[in-house]
Image (cartoon, rainbow over the protein chains, first blue to last red):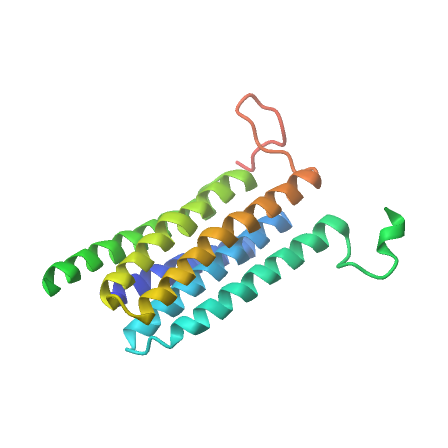
Length: 92
Length: 109
């Protein structure tokens, strides 16, 4: 049964990658990357059960945190044009 | 008892995988960015929740189950936050949604 879920998650991963490659705006690509991150977390959890090694769940947790930090950093860059340099406050 | 748990876990895993694929197809098929965000949320809520629930039925009440709950809470809190920030950034950048009465940018098709 884990194989079915893993294959379904891989298909979702392929569709999200296709959207990341096609996406007309940059926000489509960021959203696709976000989906890829979520699906990769689930895939790591399922693979841990598939191989009988639940230690993979720790990797999934770490991957989730990294994914969130990466998404927020990219969005901050697109909203403000920089990631916060010295002297940023004076510009208002 | 174990058989019932296996069947329940099987149902949750398969329907969770199906919802993930539905979200992926929505990500490809939807006409503009804001509707694609809606399609992606199907993968992130129902798909992720059902897959994790199916794995929890397999794990039983152990540390593994606690880790699965942590992953579920992480997804449920972080992905709406990221999606909100993303949509807000898109709106601030002037990306207009496609409207039914012809407002906004015309669709690709």
